[in-house]
Image (cartoon, rainbow, N blue to C red; front, side, top):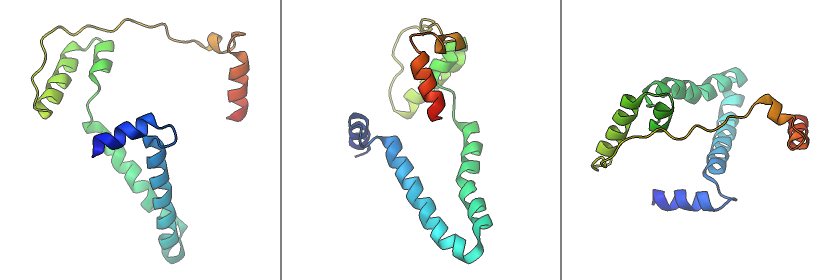
Length: 129
């Protein structure tokens, strides 16, 4: 069941869904390389391997923005339309109530990174990357 896999992968830090996708993608590219590279060369391997990324970019046009993002930008009508579409897809009725914008949180600034509280961590990450 898909729900069980999602729940297990979220609860188990050793089997996160992202790691599973990374593993599957790595295995697929290794298999593709072992077939394509010896026969038609590495240039064709690059072309074939880039097809899923190009398709994903094209599909992004059809993926709606999240209702939360629309709320944060003040686009209440788009947020409501997204929620109604989701409710319709799930065969549920939209709950009664009014959409409220979440409280604004203070965003971090560059100065926060060099604050003595975070300076050591910032330098460590910069060195690692």
